[in-house]
Amino acid sequence: MSATTAPTLEAATAFVKSYGAAIALTQNPNITAEEIAAALVRHYGSKFTAYDHGHVVAAPSNDPDFWLKGVTTHLKRFQKSGLGWDMKLSDFRIEVVGGDAAKCHVTWSISPANQEGWEWTNVYGWKDGGEISAEDGLRGAFESVVSDEETEELFRRVPGFLEIEV
Image (cartoon, rainbow, N blue to C red; front, side, top):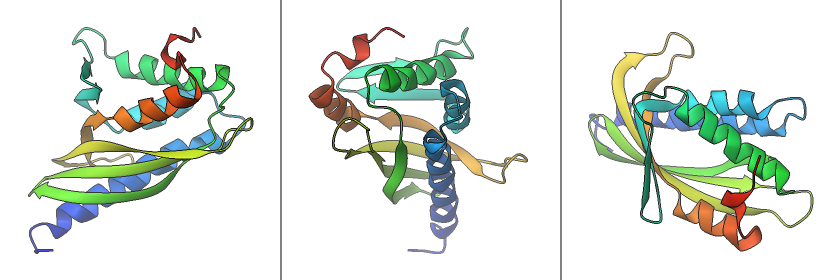
């Protein structure tokens, strides 16, 4: 690791750990889907884009709560499907791809009450915006996620997961 990539690696690592702490909120039985979603979405940049099996989802400019609503719905589907949302950060690997950017390979695990748990890896694109958040001392934001493996694993266990009405 060069001296020029060390600060990027350090900042991206802190950011992934913070995102892991946000998903760990799912282990609190007294928390709502909206509260968890807010903690997760605060890690997304203003132009955050999701990629999944060739589908591209980006927030419309006229809907600032797009991701908050979407993540809340996603979490509610976990609950309604019987999987629950006992999730945690299992592992991660940061790949610095520039002086202020990194690919973050993040492995999540879920422990459903009604079946054996599993893991999946999403790949997040992290970019350092240069400013340090006064709220938590973190730098940067996720600009993107590739979540093919998450969807594959969900569909394997709950066919029609995305059609579950909440």
